[in-house]
Image (cartoon, rainbow, N blue to C red):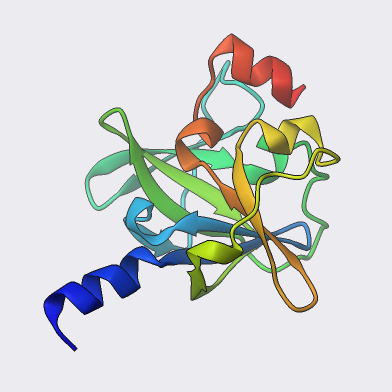
Length: 160
């Protein structure tokens, strides 16, 4: 294959890091994820918004930990559930860790199979969704990680 053929094939696909949050499958563009880690030593952030789980020092960087369950209006994790994982991202020069139940795999999906966000999706999810992929037995919701980390009033009203 030539370089042009490789580039056009890549343009016809989307690579997503998949994660599970409260049993629902979500995906984030692979280029948005800086790292995947198991958070340890999260310190509370007094007076922070409820979706802020705290902060931690990750290799010399202060990382704000955002609870995806709270941000998406999902129930808290059950007592005794496996430890959460985090995906590390950056927004506006700040480092964030998004707490999820699990980080699963990287999927390469055809761009042609991408669909708009369904109208019946919860408004809190619609506010942070780019669209969906219908997989064999599941719906994969593609998150706009920038909007998930946006705490402006208009976005928060949609999430309420």
